[in-house]
Image 1 (cartoon, rainbow, N blue to C red):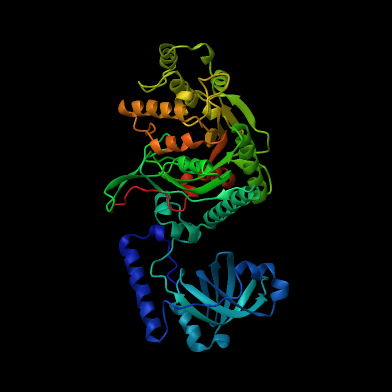
Image 2 (cartoon, rainbow, N blue to C red; image 1 turned 30 degrees about the vertical axis):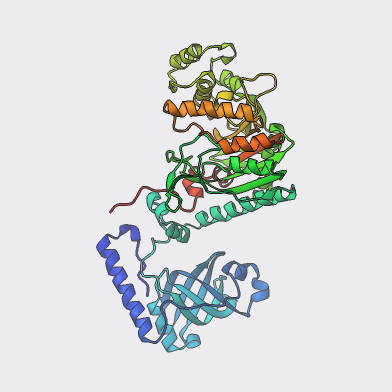
Length: 498
C-alpha cells in the first residue's frame, strides 16, 4: 500500500525512484479531481484527547488531522496511525463504510502524507482505542520518504540541518521544545508578577557593547554606516533606568562571533533585567528564585537529573569567591599575588596559557576557568571578580581591585552573570578607555568606547542591580540535553556542500 522503506538504507537513486512513485500517486489523485495539497480542514479533537476522554467520546463522531505514520491493509479492512502535535491514534478503514472508490484511494497514501479523517470513536477487539473512518481527505501529499519509524533519524548533522524531519520522527525532540516554551513563559510570569516591564531594544548597534565578546558586523546602506549585531542589550536597558523606569527586562537573541561547541552557538537567547535601588545581592536572590520556581512549575521539582547527576536547584545556592574557588580546587593561592610577574609565573608553572595584555585579574580569571569551573556541579555563585575583567561593574567598597559581581554555575557551566551596576560616569569612562587600549593592543573582544552611554550616566543612573541568564543553557539543564544544539530549533551549521 505504501512505500514503507528505510531511508537510511537507500541511496540517492533509490530515493529518486520513491519520489517518482509518489509523484505518480500525486498525479493519480489530481486525475480524480481531488487536490493532493488540500485546503483548510476543521478538526474537532487532537489524538491525545481521543485516548484521554474515551469514555465520553466512545461512539461519537470526531474529526482529526495529522501525518500518516503507519499503514497496513487486510483486504477489505485497513489500519493506519496518524500523528498530530499531541501524539498518535489508530484509524480503522473498512471498504463497506467508506465505499469502494474512496477505499481504493487508500492505495494512493504513503507514510508521511497529511490527511483529515472523520469517524466514530471505538475500541477494537484487541482493546486499542481507534477511530472508524467514515471519510478521509488528503491534505498534503508527502513526496519524500521519511526515515524508517523504528530506526528514527539518528544522524546528528541531518537532525540539525533538517529539524523538520527530526521533529517528525523523534517525538522526544518535540517535547524538548514544548518544555522550552514553558520555561520561557514561566520566566516571563515570574518577572511580570514582580512588576518588571518587558521592553525591546535595538538588535543593531552603532557600537558593540554590554559584554566582552567579538561582534558580527554589518552595513546599513542608506545611512552608509557600520553596525554591529548586538552582543548584549545591557547598555540600552540601563539607559531606560536613567530615563526613569525602575524595573525592566528583555528576553531575546544576542549574537557573538565566537566558536561553535556543545556550549556555544553564535546566536543565542538571553534574559537581562535591571532594577533600580538594589545591588548584586538582590540579583543573586532573583537568579536562584526564578530558576528554582521555573523548575518547580515546569518539572514539578527543584531536584533535577542532568547527565545522570542529581542537581538541587533549591535556594539558597552555594557562594564562594573566585580566589577561594581557585585555592579550593588547586594548590594556587592568589591572595599573596601583587604583581603581574607573579601571576604569570603561577600560570606558567601550571601550564595555563594567558594573553600578553592580561593583568593580575585577567590571569586569575583564566586560571579559575582552568582549575575550578568543572568542579562547580551544584548551583554555585562565584563572587569577587577582578575589576580588570568587569568593565561595567561597580567596584567593591572595601577592595577596589574587585567588583560587586557574581557568576552562577551549574554542572561546570556559567548560566548567569550579574552585578551592582557601575553608575559613576567618570569611573566608567576610564574603564572604557582602558578597554580601548586593550583593543588597540589586539584584543578584539574588549569593550568599545560608548560616549553616549557615558553621557547618559552623567544625567544620573540610580544604584542598580543587573542580571543576565542564558536561556539555552538553562533549557539544557531542565531538559537533560548535553548539547546546546539540542535546545535551539535551528542551530548554526557550516554551509552544506554535496
